[in-house]
Each structure stands twice: as structure tokens, then as C-alpha cells.
Image (cartoon, rainbow, N blue to C red; front, side):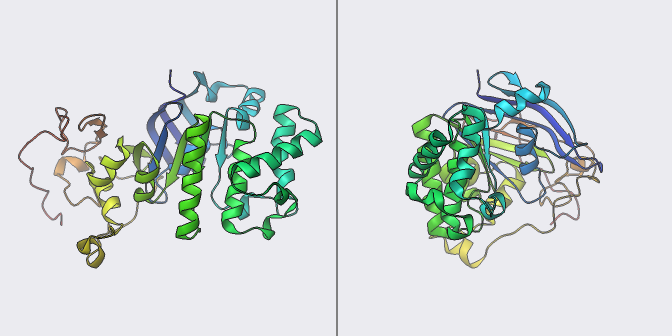
Length: 336
């Protein structure tokens, strides 16, 4: 049984915006799954839905099976017990997530007190141990958030996420606003902790290169849907969906003069979730769209060994080496 199994997840905000549309994901214990996409593609909404952290009035349907138990059908008491102890989240922007008027040790100790029924002294000791586990001295439990650097605050957030020994950690842009050196340290730390404790990890990022280096598998989201998934390095280096390819090519590769001096981008913006275009939501920006793309949506289909992509150019008979050999269809008229 998978640690996490998300089936046909639909999330619609009160204003009518369809932020997640039929998403499905699976994650095993000890596995690292990356979720990539531009801002507004539904990544964070999906993450918040996993622990029912979305605003009141949001409509959520589908199934979110955590160790076989559907989070969406849990009573509130059970949801509160699962948060922290079953699954926890590392939010982006540690300075905004930590309480500025409480010492970091008290903030780490709070979930231990609530979920582990520890004594205050025991919770404080646990907080110090957790800080040492993420590479900070136990004495830093007495510090306020503003007394720590950005990288140190992010380590505190990771320590909080580990406080009650969860089986699943969701890291939403955990290295945002950190410099490259600190980012690398935080990513190595997360990888080590996942490996040592056999945790399941979902990491959200705009940066496919980071996810390719950190995760085992990668899911690319666009307009609330997973449009491509597969082994992380393969998706990054040889995307089968035009959107995944555009994301990958937006990052210059070290040692590749072509990408350095002629970086590629993707014009336009993701569609408004409350006013999605007909057919494939990506077709207005797609450089290889066909006429059928404007009228018929595309579902995930096999695109090679352990790979799927939602694109008309991918045939259902794709083999282990990639998409099945075929004559490339002509793009629709007027498509660049």
C-alpha cells in the first residue's frame, strides 16, 4: 500500500476558480516526489488540500488516502491528530511562518506538547535535539526568529516538521529567497533526513533542476492538472509534454553555451482558473498545438517506461525508449 494515494482530486475556491482538476499522485515511504509548475498552476493548493488547510468554503472532492485512510472523510478530531504526527508541511517563507514574538524552541516544542503529551521539560529537550538534528546548536532554542539567518530559520521550520515523527513531509518552496550555497545545504539536509527516517517527501518548486537533483519522480502541473510525470531526471532532460519541455529550457544549463547565450522562455501566462480555455488548457501557449487541441482535452497516457504525459503528440503505444516513432503532425495554422 502506498503511503499517499491522491485520486481524482478537484479543488474549487468559493469564487469559482478550479485550482486543481482531477489530479492523481502516489507516493511510497522513502520516496521523494517533486511537483513543478509556474505560479498559479495549483501546486500549493494541492499541498494544502492534503491536510485540509484550505480556506472555508472551498469545495474539495476526490480521495486523499494517507496510509489508506481518506483525509477528506476524517472527522476534525482525527484531522488534528494526523497533522504533525502523520504528515506535516514546511511552508515557504520561514520568516512569515514563525511567530516573531516567541522563541523558536517554544514553537518547536508546541506540537510535541500537544501530540506527544510530553512534559514541558521533555518538550524543550526534544526541541534542542531536533535543532541539532538539522545542524543547529541546541542553545539556539532560546533565539527569536529575527535573531537567525534565513537558512537557520528554514532549518527551524524543518525541525518543527519533524517534531512528531510524521511519515510524510510536504515542502512548499523550502529554499525560496535563500542564496545558492544555503539552498544546497538545505536540500542536502532534506535528502539526508528523508533517507535516514524513511519518510515520504513531496517537494514543490518552480526549479526543475533542483527537483531533478533532489527527487526520485517529478510531476509537472499546469492549470490545475498533472500534465506529465515520470523519473525526475528523465522528465527534466527529455520532457514529453511541451509545457514540461518549456519549463526545463527556461533554466540555462552549466556548460551549455547554447542555453546560456540563447535562453528560451514561454510567452504568456497560465490561464485564469475561473476562466479556463476549451480543450487542452495549454493550447493557447503551445508551440506545437493542433486544431484538435482547442476542442478536446488531453488525459495522461503512457509516454515511455514509468512515464505519462497529457499531450496529443504522445501515443498510447510509447515504448521504453520514449514516444513511439511516428510522423510529426503539422502544427495548426498560425502557431509559431
